[in-house]
Length: 127
Image 1 (cartoon, rainbow, N blue to C red):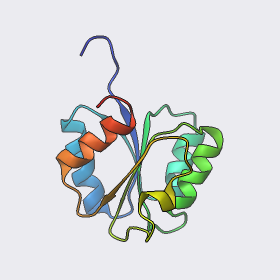
Image 2 (image 1 turned 45 degrees about the horizontal axis):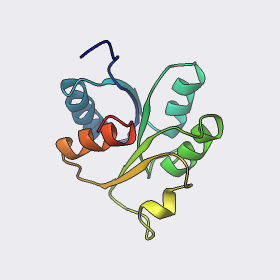
Image 3 (image 1 turned 180 degrees about the vertical axis):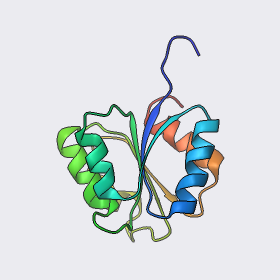
Image 4 (image 1 turned 90 degrees about the horizontal axis):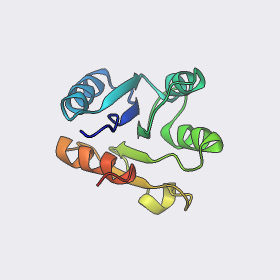
């Protein structure tokens, strides 16, 4: 890579096994990963001033769900690129989650790693 830093992904996923598999796959694909066990933990990581380029989040999580996490993080970073992965996509699809400004991709679980990697690169403008 020519002087560009690897994309840093803040990942909020409450299913431990899924989180481990995703983290390993993303690391193998050249990303840096900040793993959070749910939306609340992801907010805590973000509040420490941790630097990340893309939010990767599940929708259904305990304590703080993905929709609320996106809203709170984008309150401070309206242009934050987001990839949502869920087994329960909202009826309106991407439009139900999209606030119209920053890039957002919606993937339905189970997510193929190659599809996830390309979605992350796409929302980050590296496609």
